[in-house]
Length: 263
Image 1 (cartoon, helix red, strand yellow):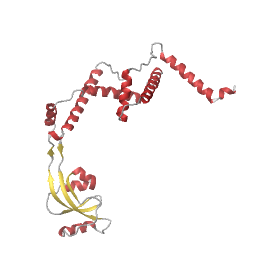
Image 2 (tube, helix red, strand yellow):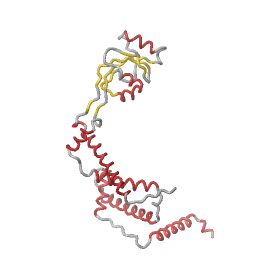
Image 3 (cartoon, helix red, strand yellow):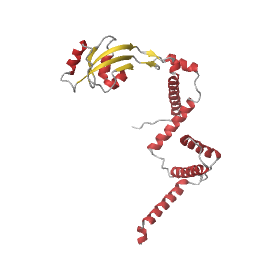
Image 4 (cartoon, helix red, strand yellow):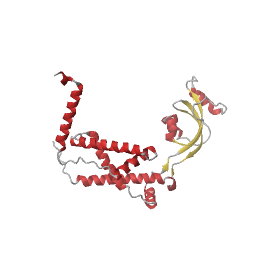
C-alpha cells in the first residue's frame, strides 16, 4: 500500500475527484461546444492590436485562440462548480460591468454644442479660474539666523538686503492660493492673499522660514471661455448623464423586487 503515499497518486486522485465533481455539477443541459468564430478571432486580433500597436502574426493569433479556448473551458467549469457563488470579487465585478453597460448606453449619443453651451451657462462655477497672484519674495532662514523674523522686519526698509538663498523660485506669476500653499504652506498662502499689490510687506512665516513679499498683480476669480473648456463641459455633462441613467435603471429594477428586512 506504499503507492498510496506517492504524491503523484494523490495528485491524480484529487484530479479525479475534481473531474467527478465537475461532471456532477454540470448537469446534462450545459453545452460543451465552443465555437471559435470569425467574430471571436477578430475581437482577439483587435485586442492584440490595441495593446501591441500592430496586427498579430498567424502564429500569435493561433496562440490567442488557444488561450481563449483554455479560458472559456476554465470559465465554464468554474461556473458549473458554482465557484462564483458568495464571491465578493465576482459580485462586485458583475455589478461594475452592469453599471458600465448602463453608462455606455447613456453616453452613446454625443451632445451637440447647444446642449454643452446650456450646461456651461447653467453651471458658472464649473469652468472658472480661482483668484491668482503674482509676487516676489525675499527669504530669511530660521536655520541660518538667530532671529530671522527680526532680520526680515529690519530688511523692510532696506531693499538691498536680498535675504538668504532659497531652494525654490524668487518670483511667481499668476498662481492660485492652492498652488502657493503646496509650495510654501497653507498658512503662508492664506495670509499672502489678504495683502494688496504695492511695496514690500511682511514678514510672513512659511514652512521654510520668514519672507518679505512684494505683490505685483492680484487677479480675481474669472470665468473660462466656453471654447477653452468645452472638453471639461462635455466630461461633466456625460458624468451627469451616467449618474442619472444609473439612478433611473436602479429604481426601475428596484420596483421589480420585494425587499424584506428581517429583525
